[in-house]
Image (cartoon, rainbow, N blue to C red):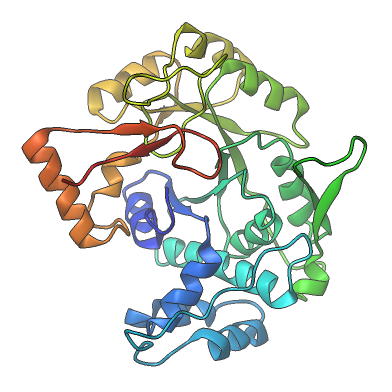
Length: 347
């Protein structure tokens, strides 16, 4: 959910209540780098890094980014290394460690389940991110904003500490050409090949029975379940099927083709959860009547005390809801992924 909105605190609290707490893995490398440069308030980042299985990597990250007392107000942040098809060793190690830190903190001190969410469209960090989360014992990996066909097989490979590859979507790539990013755990992290890792469950975030059936049959490994997001769900949404049509306000128009055939998904025989308009007790029961194992809650949790949203912005959003009701705009162009994206006015 966003960048550091569903952070380790929110995921930990959710998990402790018996649900699946999920941390956002989007840009988590920059999140760790900036938290350290802000002085690591509370010492949580440093505490987690003390448990990273390769102390030298943790030490290098602290030497590079940690600022005791925090950087000056007018001082710019030191940026994380840019992702490339062949990202630098320092960049990959920061990514591994950042995912480890977020999952470690979310799981610290209790026995609940924790997952991590990635956007398929942001492809280059996937392998390093997943490996770092697995080092911390992540229980689930969730992915949407694209077709996550390659992730199950990558999790299988990484759980054995083996070299993994991920095919990248490259615009204007010549027919027959294929571009891959690779991750070799032994070279990048340096743990022994028998270092114990558990393959997390994989949940695909989808918006159609067609995609669910395709992933169940054609993914590179086992898809353990599905999260079905309806168009009213917060964050990114699948675009309408067919030709894009907009309302007078510029919002995508969804129609009968976008209805999800839950019976077909249930017939696949794997657990699924419903999201988007299901954030209430009565709707939870309705979802379970359709065969769902439960629901996913995002928008409501983004405004809770434990979320990573700036408290001032959070209060503005809550005040706006009290004064004007819930006003949400589905922006067809706001996100660089090309997917529709939910926007909430604060005034």
